[in-house]
Image (cartoon, helix red, strand yellow):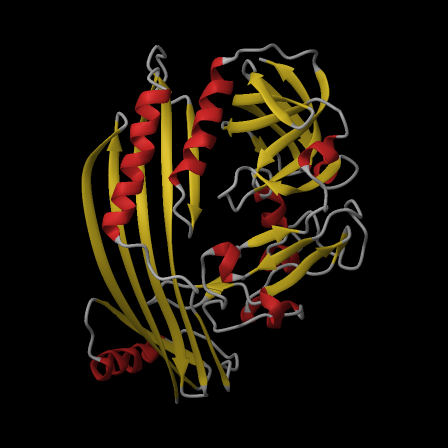
Length: 408
């Protein structure tokens, strides 16, 4: 019999913000322990919140082998790795001071708006070790500001959203970005004409459908739009998508919940438009004879199974201005209510968008409708991921693709 121990500790310090004022502060410190035992191709699992007795949990996990849950896959073994950030956790009093500085700036410079929601400090620890010599340890700390904004004269619940997660506390950089966001919001402009435009997003708004189609179970069962297409060029040669477990950019563990670590923390799924592989865990890699990409997820007291991993796109080496090449663009900031059809067609209303000229935000557009197709978004109409960030502190680049745009 083999045994595996999962330990998680999450510390969170949160500031509740209401109408551009700190309303309340709370903190929590949660420990979780999970024990997995493996025998004769079966798995038994037990877990506990808070302080735990490993011997007692192991006994429960052994008892749960009687449920007959199948897990006939070899455990990862003989690997010891640890990762922790170079910086120390930000002191809580310094974080509160920084948030107060941001809110004071917004009250003074943008009195026509009300800002609410949350600010967070995170400290996370996650480890997996087993009786086969696996010993993986991850520690990280970061902070986040998540602010909804509402124009005081507006009847909407919210008019915009500003988010940042990172390791550097630079209130001025965040303030400058929030100020720019609000100033452009107040400058209303019209869509020059309806038709095809470069549509720009800060992040990976349109990738959900593609990642669903890259699911190893769907691919193997033949229900994915990409089934049977490994080795085929189906997207733009400018498009490379990889599974990303780099803790620096994901703020997450460098291993999956089966203890798999990919070389350089990445695994190519699409390379220069060619489908390399869907993402898989051990089960579906074995079941469908697909390469194993290390995409297992699990509750601390659950059986590992396939989950959508973190992912990223190779950059173009060009700034947003260079990518657009003088064309006007549509920066989509809030998009909700649309979806892809099972065949891949896409359409959605856009609640908030800014016009871009010469790579710069110009003004707020009326509500829009955008539409395209999965194979056009990542194929002939794909423009690229910019080298420049949304703002100084942001981890997010711009992503641009041509779409049909019209006013609602």
